[in-house]
Length: 248
Ligand SMILES: [Zn+2]
Image (cartoon, rainbow, N blue to C red; front, side, top):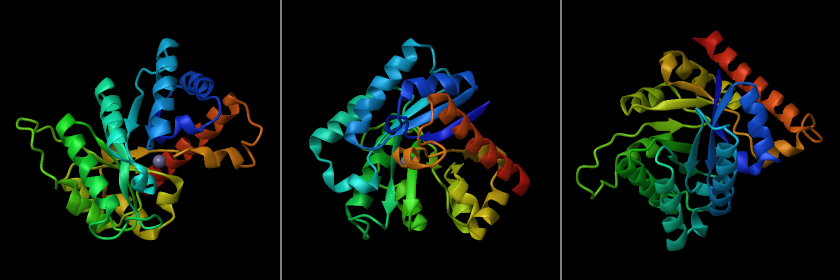
C-alpha cells in the first residue's frame, strides 16, 4: 500500500473520480487544504468520498499557507477551527515560511501565522503539516513557541515536513521534536538533503506527490482521464519510495 502524505485533491479535476481510482490502486492519501475556498471544497469532496466508501486510511489537513497569510482575518480563523473540530483526525496546515511571498521577514505575518497554527495543533493534539522554502532554523525555533493557554492540553503533535529540503543538522534537530519527513521528487535533488535522508529512521520517512493545479498543464496529464491521473500519481509515489530505498 502506498500513502501520498501531501496531495491537494481539491485543486485537481474530478477529485472524487480520482479518489475512486486511487482507492482501486490501494493508494491512501492525506488531502491538504491551505486556503479558505479549498477548505470548503475539500470538505465536500471528503463527504462524497466517505459516502462512496473511499476514505479508509485517508486523512485531511486544514491550514493557512504562507502564500495567503495576508488575506486571512478573524472570520477565516473561526472557519478553520470549525473544520478542524468537525474532523477530529485532521492535521493542521500546511503552514510555514516561504521567502517568495510577503510577510517572510523575522517577526512577520508568516511567522505569527505559523506560531498560531503550531499552537492550534498542540491544543487539538494534531500533527502539523509544515511548508518551508527558506529558513528551517526559524521554523524549528518557533515550533514550540506560543505556549498553549489551555491547561491539560499536553498532546504532543508531530511536525511533518512536507517536501523536505533541509540538511543533516536540520533533520537531527527536527527528529528531537518527533518529526516526520515527507519526500517529494525535489527532495532528492539537493545533495545536502539526500545526505540527511540517510540518517532519518525509515519509519519517519513518507512520500508525497504534492499534486495541485500545476499538474493540469503537464503534457502527460493534459487530456488524461481520472484513471490515468491515478496511474501517474502512483508512479511518482513508487519512484520516491524507490529513491528512499536506494539511499538508505
Ligand atoms: Zn501543498
